Length: 255
Image (cartoon, rainbow, N blue to C red; front, side):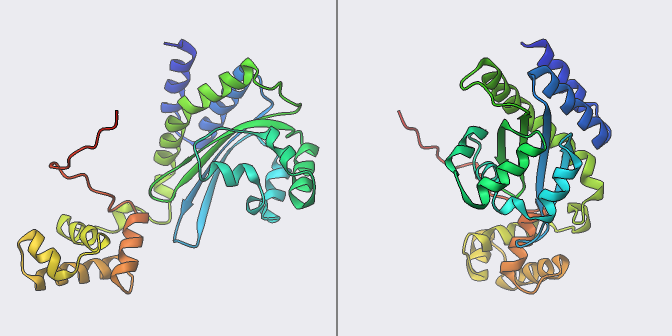
């Protein structure tokens, strides 16, 4: 196994704060021959509002302008990477020869962000992450540098994501520990998400329908929402419930 990769993973896992993560990111981009690096995680607080965690060494003036101007809404790199795990080479900028997107790319180049490679990772709970290596000059198409960047970013991103999640967990607005649903309450919510009525759930769980209603009402109260649909949505965002994989599920094979 690549010893450099092993060492970097150990460095990531040993970070105690975001400054440490930034130092490791800089080490990664220096090794791969790029001028800047960034790692962004979007964390949903509700289904219409999210917070962003940024770690990297992009020019601070560009980060400030990007946020104030709402460039995330026109940035094709963000649009692609927040919805796909396929690497995005910035040469696709050329697909936007005019208009507001073209102007956006022009501004980025003024800050030395001329070309690069980005990889995103959408998560089931709505979180999305994006890691980018930027260059102050045009990259050679299909070069060894590009291939190495894609390989290393793909391998390292899960470790970076997880370490940032652990570091920032105590600062997140919503934490799983602040809402304590019982296992039965979670189970009832999962079955509601499956489209089952209280009567259906009672039959499935072999309990009284009134008991199911009791658990659902408790869940709504604990989650501080007004109905079952909103309870499911918030429970998913908090990571309290997720798709279940029954022991007796039968896999489908394709040859």
